[in-house]
Image 1 (cartoon, rainbow, N blue to C red):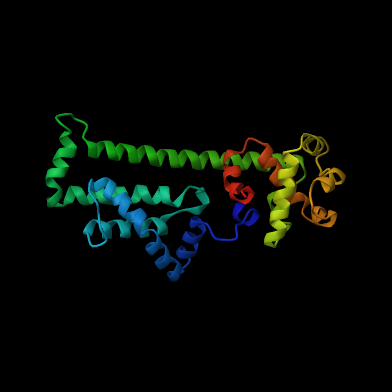
Image 2 (cartoon, rainbow, N blue to C red; image 1 turned 45 degrees about the vertical axis):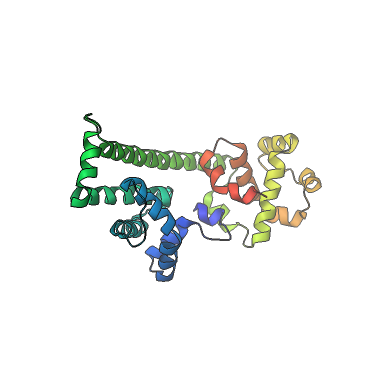
Length: 246
């Protein structure tokens, strides 16, 4: 839903993952190639030495990255790379435990200079904590979306309204965001919007170089963006941040 409302010119990594899950083989090959450095870095962090593409460990990481793409649930709103990092590290840990060439390393990790809690266990604990934080972020994001929906109702707006009236063209979408930003940065404009539950059209026309016709056409969309920027919506702000930069 948020992708429909605040869609970017280029697909996000998470959107590409959805395309791959729907059978886009070309996108899969491109993603696997593009993120080889990420895979090598993640695998090397577990193995405690540099891993090259010719190493078996890299192949395990590559397969794990592919698995993460296919298992990723875009509806949860979490980061694909954060999810992939957890999957890759777990697969590499399993490999270390099962491979004889890592026997000495495994012993060193487990004993940890005589302490009961080895580095390998510590790494697993960190992964569990990381997974926990991802889940908590997902929960907070869902709660935030529910709060936003309730706020929209006070303005007689809904997600379905916004999707229907979302600007279709990139330049129109940018103009709508700029109008919303202008309102948030102007106390008088913001106060009027909050009080009257509608765009302060006359004043807004004087603040932005956008025609009244365009403002009228995109008024619901502009109000929604204003509510996000002016409200306590950390995740939604992060989602649309890129559109407001530059």
